[in-house]
Image (cartoon, rainbow, N blue to C red; front, side):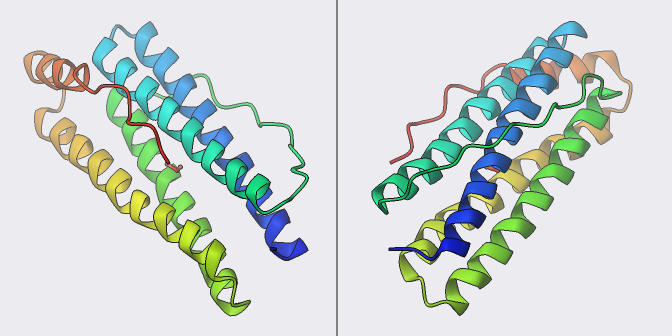
Length: 168
Ligand code: FEO
């Protein structure tokens, strides 16, 4: 059994994960429109991953016997600037998600809610991976700057990202 406050906070996080999915779908649409089809694929995979994150929290709340309250999902932006800007915004967003998850972990520890703490540690670890992979793409984009061939190579690499493995 989790506390009322923890339920509310996890529902908020569930909403943030759905917003992340929506944001990445908007980024994918933007990249498609700019003919960066590899980047569009990368963000579409990210969308799927965020959807699974939301589902993981939802499943946990259900397992805890909660009646889940779903909130409206905010509208994401439509335009994101250069391809580098899109990935920089993605990193900024992930850093904000990390900070939220750290705060939630603090709360779980403080209230001795070890089951929720365990769940959140999975997310905290996932954030390390997410931030690292976006940072790597940003470094490559900064390296090639406006060089068309370099951008094409990176876009081809981003096209190879495949559907994320299902999350338990
Ligand atoms: Fe599920 Fe990328 O935060």
